[in-house]
Length: 239
Image (cartoon, rainbow, N blue to C red; front, side):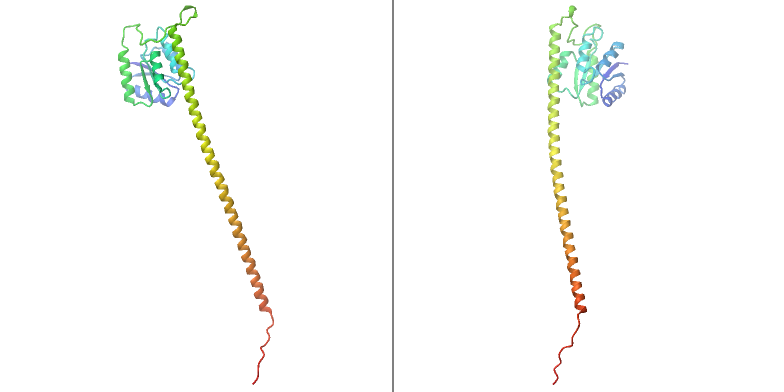
């Protein structure tokens, strides 16, 4: 049974992928971030790693770099499976790092399975042969090879670009919130005006009813006065 290590800090996503793979005959191990995945791979090297990119502690890009610099693990094929890094430049950087495949979420389960089968088939190479290596270990004395410097530069560019994207999303969210707040204030002001008008109308209505009652009282008093007034007989003219 083929061992696959899947990596994602989103538990529902991790569970769904685990169920899919186990239901298709794969032995699955899980990790919540790149650091956990690296430790798991060093303890029990899997046949394939499927990893998210945006994760705490260690992201997927860093995990890929660490794997490709490890002589024992660099031949393990890795598939990126991400909903955050969707730019063509992100995918190119993933290939430069040595990723075997890049899947952009959401993706159909059948496509995930086909990509895994194809990647595993391509990885059947002579022992020790690297699967698209992209970086080498630092040279003795701490000097960094030119290729490693290029990778780090690309990595920084990816992070800056993603940060700019997140800032733009935050600004858009703030603008939307400001519009919603302004609309809410407008509605609240309109409600206050309507309540004020209703109160004014209510007070005016009560005032009219009070005046009507006063008039009715005055009329009744006048009628009562008329009723108590002495009555004198009319003058009679005799013939």
